[in-house]
Length: 260
Ligand code: IPE
Ligand code: IPE
Ligand code: MG
Image 1 (cartoon, rainbow, N blue to C red):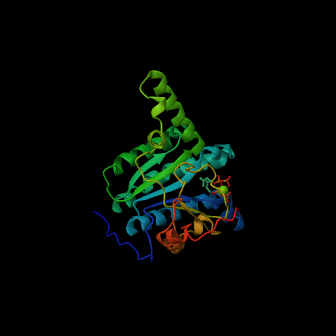
Image 2 (cartoon, protein in one colour):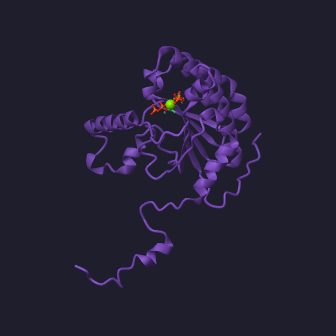
Image 3 (cartoon, rainbow, N blue to C red):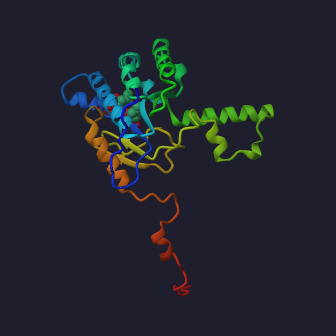
């Protein structure tokens, strides 16, 4: 059964695709005198709430940065815990995803994931494949430079095989070789825990996304903070390098005397 989708009035444009750098789990736990992994466990609650709320608000795509290509450098125990959490999440959240008509897709170098986690993930992707509500993309073992390098390698191989003309390569050609070329670029990217950096996330796709950084750590990021970010987005003026109507008249050079 499809859930009732009700778009909130944000007083401006609605972000059709939201991407989130879910950061600060470790800090959140450490501040409470708990081991870092406690923060990861608590962060799953935010994933559930934000996913459900986005689906109910009619967001078309939600991309969550869950584990970066660089996160493999962390201590083995933390990585093992995260991979187990991923496996459990994939099984336990199936009902929530189905109830909310959410389709799951994962992006990243997934072949690096442990077999059990990858298996659970593929099963959930298959189970939800026909849902036509929100698309939930989980970025796992994801690095944007790796994604672009993988695309470049594929293009080079096709050029060598004679199936791709190098002279024809433009932005749209390159996009077609990225992990998930059919999903439109994010409109809004949210980062929790206050860091002002992209940490190798969707470098190509975020070219014109609006940034929103909150000091709240991911385990405390829930419905109210999400709505706050969406309202802030609605108030932004996106220009994509051009000018807004009101500024076009002011761009006239007619009344300017030569000064040089
Ligand atoms: C984000 O929280 C989760 C992952 C990167 C897997 P962190 O684990 O980075 O938490 P902090 O940034 O150390 O507080
Ligand atoms: C970014 O967080 C990756 C994810 C949220 C999965 P990190 O904690 O890995 O980023 P840095 O190390 O602070 O840049
Ligand atoms: Mg971090």
